[in-house]
Length: 290
Image (cartoon, rainbow, N blue to C red):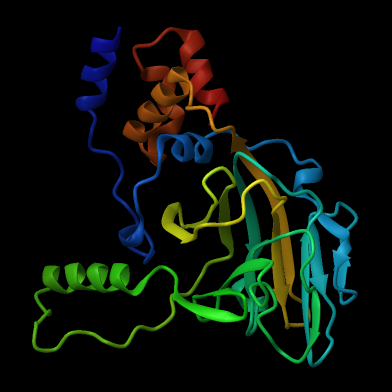
């Protein structure tokens, strides 16, 4: 059966072409099998892990009835934050954050915080990442922040330079005597996935299906960490959903095989599992886990 499946997949290896409209696929890094399986698993049903906290929240944020969405009131000269209701101390976890680029303004930050961190301040500031208890990615400038310090752009400059050099080479417009030195911030789309590996002590982000590498490492271990955002724009609405998680154990062989098959199929052929030379029960497994 394995041989038949390999032949079928290889004979149809011309998977759908990648979209050229996104700047992020060239910046992607390889993911661990643990993260790859987690990202490609069926999302968990919404529960309290998808809730913003009604207690650890600036008074200038309004919480929706379902507690999955917060909206900032139109208050001037104020920086306002909110963190999730539930945090994690161990495991690999992925949350989805939906935040319209048209309703971010300046100082739009997402990241994580410990249980106690400032969630309101006067003036317009980067709030998540302003102290030693939080780590944030400012979306307008692409800068990483921690302990009140800007740590540089994310994704890193070296990845962007390499990506642009490859593109210039392809278009035959790159010259070594005129390297590009000015880097403009990348426009971040509405949907961003926050990837926290509490076991490894790392935080990263997925944009347009591309994991952009670890943004922060050496995070404190064994302490509760929470998704958090901060904003200065009136009308900003941010929606939170917990997607999936994994323990420190390696993925099951069946999950790894399912992930490999879906990768070969490509996004455009995910519904064609019925054409695979597999028993119906395995075809159903592929559909039910994606």
